[in-house]
Image 1 (tube, protein in one colour):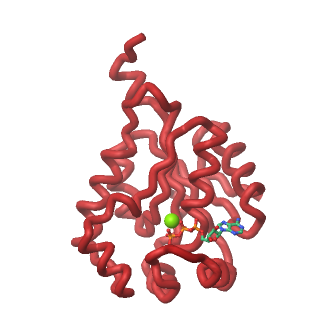
Image 2: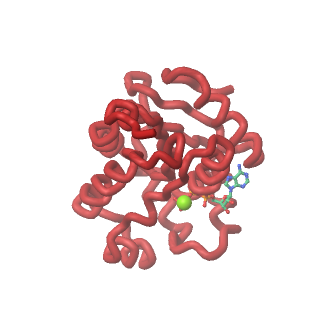
Length: 184
Ligand SMILES: Nc1ncnc2c1ncn2[C@@H]1O[C@H](COP(=O)(O)OP(=O)(O)OP(=O)(O)O)[C@@H](O)[C@H]1O
Ligand SMILES: [Mg+2]
């Protein structure tokens, strides 16, 4: 059966956001699996030049980020009938980046993985086979504009519990109507 454009527009999408090592990719993959949504990773949409910069430990500039965010925004709009929604892992560190994504994908929700920088650093130090050098964490923490209470549709989630627990909480939060919520 064909879907109308209205149905396509209303297919849900969530961005799992936060600094490098907060668990975006790990959480997005399992949440997508549980909800039968598709999992995407904004890291896969960087231009080759940006990947080279990150590998070299050079922080990206906004000039690098705007075209990347536009690719992420376009990818968030899910028109495929084979998925019930989209989970995107994307750092979305600044309010302006999040607003750019909201403009591309109306109704977009964010799930902010928040927690102790020392714990994040420990997890990054253990992580293997990833191009993001752990030293970039400090610059990401500096860039991060924590979503404020005035920001719509942001769920705050503690990254400290084991992965399956974080995923449980994320799925439960996504099952409730959009609101600015802190998950205990
Ligand atoms: N809740 C958790 N408990 C334990 N380990 C976790 C948890 N969440 C993520 N990890 C581990 O922490 C490391 C960082 O997670 P992940 O790669 O998903 O972070 P990320 O936010 O996607 O980082 P980047 O922005 O660099 O891609 C990984 O090795 C992952 O397996
Ligand atoms: Mg990742």
